[in-house]
Length: 408
Image (cartoon, rainbow, N blue to C red):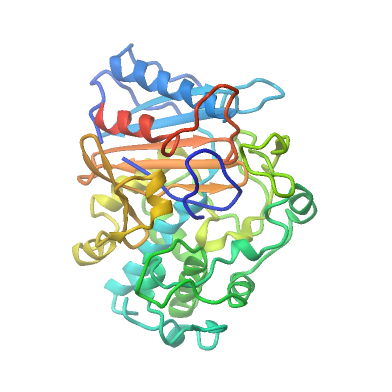
């Protein structure tokens, strides 16, 4: 969910990155798990080196998918399964965590374009009585502020008691947490700031956005995402699992580490990794539930930024940004946040992005403003522990590979 420290972190869902030309010899990715075989190129060799370099920071495996026009270039490194030593499948499905947010924001903006709600509507209008208590007030928070993380609403994931310990996760990984239950947890805390006065990433905003979609349409937000985005774009590897704990095959094993009491990710007590692949991610919901692939992720980003999903007025609203906070900018210097999209500088200009972290998987991505070039990176952990002697990264560990993919 929120963007985290640049080294390694606790489970939650999340955000991301960035532009470049692929060689004309790159070929479309195969449907089966056969190795793509474009001729050797400087870009492919450099991307492979960057993917290999991510292993130093503790991810078991990595898959990078780059798209330009109809051409696809993929590289992978490490292992998708540490027991069998198999690589991450070329067409692996994985939990995309907070990359779910731009899907949900797109549906909200489509409804705005249809005149069915307004970005200036108060949350109270659609969800009466839900945002209330300890200074939280649904009459003071707008739909725009939810999508832009300027609502000041508290973070519910920090209040799910079992989410950050191995014992708790293993005991409750198949429990269902509804969106209304998640919001109720958040209402136990005071607001972070008065609505509209600052910026702070909170998954509570998107739990509410999903509920507003349901209030406006009379249908679950998953159905609206499926009918408005997944089916029209033919995202055949993308699913909305709800309470289903399984990831459709093929997929890598998702590994997770949980710190001991008082320990940080850099501490020797940072626990041994466990298989966290199967879990009920209803607790993530509209903030981070979706499963997808690098191919589908690239197709979605290119369609979104390229204007295929939103009318110009709504796309302009999505791309109207505000500065993020200092913690966020540590990972992504110069980052600004729109409505479910993050604007991030690269060495060849701005990019649009929104990655995600969830137990077992880390997703990062980027697309150029013209929608012609994009990249999706997936790693099968969101709690990497860097190798001994490897210096802590200054920023997010994927910045180099994303910049290379987009800026070549």
